[in-house]
Image (cartoon, rainbow, N blue to C red; front, side, top):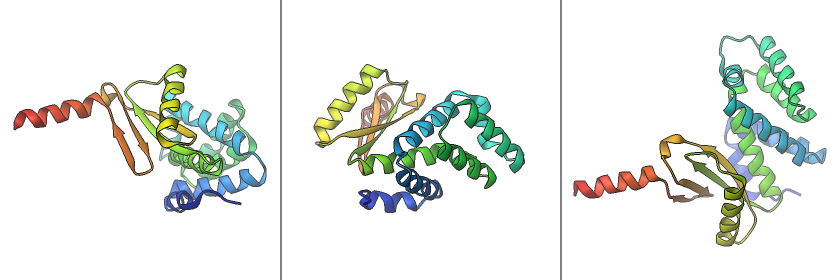
Length: 188
């Protein structure tokens, strides 16, 4: 039984969403949702931290075969589960490795929905510590009334604070927005 409801329809509309949906269905059938989600999270984090891996996923002159070989080596060295490794191979074959992070985000949303959780997209100026994540999760759970899966992203242009998007609701507590509001108010 699929509990994803409207979330699934929204996710399937994008290219990354179609890959994520196919991967989710395979993972669900194989009872490997948590393993795939963990592997995708590892890959997304590695792409964010490694300029070489990011270059691999966005290099338009790399041949399909070279991209497949490279991503296979990365999958093996990172000890990714089989479904994630195969999906990355398909992305490489179809010249869609640049969609990897978006596929991971979409998959995470599908998995959270499947577990009955709400997904919050949190963007902060700096990476959040484990204690900050725990406190944020507790506050969001109290506000929403159900478990909240948090997807994080770092955007230094925020200067400080964070933005939180839960569905269509946006909470913007960033210094950048506060400064823009102040500048607008001062213009009169």
